[in-house]
Image 1 (cartoon, rainbow, N blue to C red):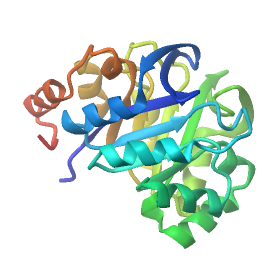
Image 2: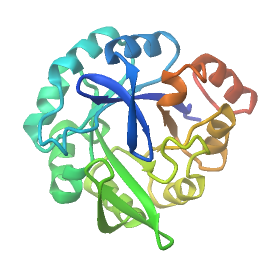
Image 3: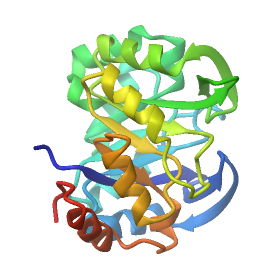
Image 4: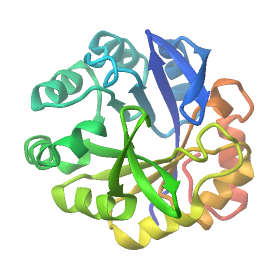
Length: 251
C-alpha cells in the first residue's frame, strides 16, 4: 500500500510566507526558507511552495527564493505561481524544484499540460484546482480564487488526467483557512473519477481532520498551512495519530 503524505504549504507573497481565510485576509507566517528547513527536519513528506500573487501581478515565480529553499530541504518540493510556459518550468526545475504546479495557465491553455508532461514527464506536473460550490456545483476559479469560470471541477479533473497531469492538488475555497475539515465528499468523488494521486487542501484544523480526509475523502496526501506555521499541529505527533488509526504513513 502506498503511504499517505503530509505536505506543509508555503504560500508566498512579497517573499514572505502568508496565510489567510477563504483566500483573503492574509497574515504573515514567517520566512519561507526557515520554515522549509524546519518542516524538512520535522518529518514532512513533501513541501509545496506557491507564489500566490504571481498570476495576479503578472510576474514569474521567484526562482532565486526557490533556489534558497531547495538548498535547505531533502524532500520533494513543488513550486507554483505564474507558470505559463516550458521555459518557466525549466527555470524552476533547474533552480531545485522537483515538481511544478500549474493552475490558471492550464485552464487558459489546456495544451500546456500536454506540452509539459511530454517534455518533463507526468511525475513533474501537478495541476492545482481551486473550486467552490455555486448553486450546488463545484466550479473552478482562477487567479488565486478571484475569477470564477464556467468549468466544473469533476470534468476538469478528468481532462487534466487525460492530458498528462501526474497529480491533482484540489483546494476547496469554501473550506480554506476555516479549520472545519477538508471537502471529503468532493475528494472521495474525485478519487472515483481519476487514477492519479489527489492532494487534499483547504480546511485542516486538527488531527482528526487529517484522519477523516484519508479515510472518508480517500485522499493520497493532505496539504495544510496555518496549523503547521502557527505550531497548532506537530507533524510527527500527527503521523503517530494517523498510524494509530491504521493509516499507512512514513515515520
